[in-house]
Image 1: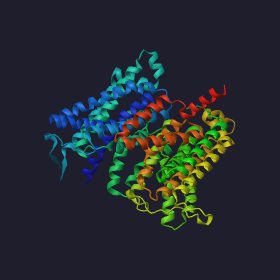
Image 2: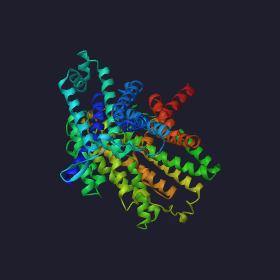
Image 3: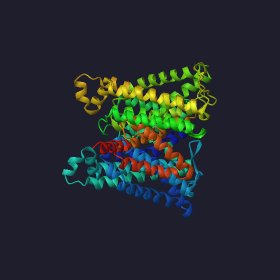
Image 4: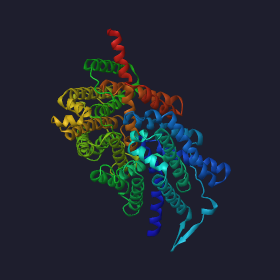
Length: 282
Length: 318
């Protein structure tokens, strides 16, 4: 039983990680909090739903829905986010607030208000026996995707030249520009990547939680908490924050269900009290 | 954010015009218009509370719907469960809002810009989540059957829509007078100083944390009043009211109206609410339009309607 709960918590953490990492990178580079990040997650899931039902292939959906979400992100960056980089935080936040409304209504208009479900691919539809209990192999796959993305990002950020440029742009954009690093281009690509990862979170979670309007709001606040707790702009913070919030939430729901709703906020409050800049300050 | 938006005279003139307009509409309107005016007035009170901390305190709160909720739920619980007359419940609920905000404010007011926004959003959602699970507060069903205050000893019958709208307008005027007083008082000046140059302000002896916490608390008290009036108007309260998007819409209202001018907040609340209401009657994809509207407003309406009024005024006088 404990193992099952552990894995469920891990799976949830990985979904949170995929969401938080995009938000946190965008924050690190642009100092913008994109409240529409949850909407991209929802749109990713819906696009996946369409691809899945049209081509009857989960794998195609898994590949193309993050790509399309990234393209939507690139589009948004070009028409909107590029122009509000130096605006004051209130305006930035309210712009993305407007995007939430647009996202929610677009989804309703295109896909209707019904909730849908996507079935896991053939290969992953069975359960695996772990010690004594059966466990759906699809959830293990989600955990694997999360860890895979973590390692890819870590490798790119820490070991490649592009990663070094990204880090330089986060730490000191002005100095980076002086060193002939094209920060605008880096912003563009990382923003799109972050949106793509939100789409990936959406499509990977769809076979578990289903697809419905309103799923954006459910994850948005959790993702924000992960970013605040982990420390905005930090990859390490995103994974540690996601694990912390994921585990506290999952285990809280099992052991202290009355307080489950409150307990993650308590974690956030405590973090802010003792580490106002988050666990890992960038 | 524009620094200081001072023109107390123009502010008062606009306020008087708005109040007169609402009184005229209230007298000659039907049942529905009167209800609508009460709604707009309550929203205006909420918008003023957001405007005050955003413009003077430099704190943008996405969690203010929590105080709306505290005011509403406190009034509901005190009057239905504990049998305290609604009129007194209202005052208690404002005090509860003030007090809770003072405690929360003490911890969060020094967080800067974007952090403050995220933390207030999360705190508001915490309250929202708690309301949803609390049995005392009726969970997702909320609380129904809340009576309006009984002021028959003053020969006032609040169950009449006409009278109730006047009652909300009365509170709006009180809030307006209070906030314009506070803005022009030392507290407001200190807040201006802190917002513009916090290091220098504390060097000349302004207690940043205390002033900002007090401002946050005053604003929360006003939001609680709005929540309490909301529950008196509708007779029921559901957790919907405490969702963070309510705070977001409040902030849009003050952007439309123009930040920092108290009358602008009222103007913004009226315009946004009327547009929302009319749109949702015509088309069912109104949220899409509203979303685009929000974005355009934020991008292109620099000083909001207040800026427009100022410009017209300047042209007329020159």
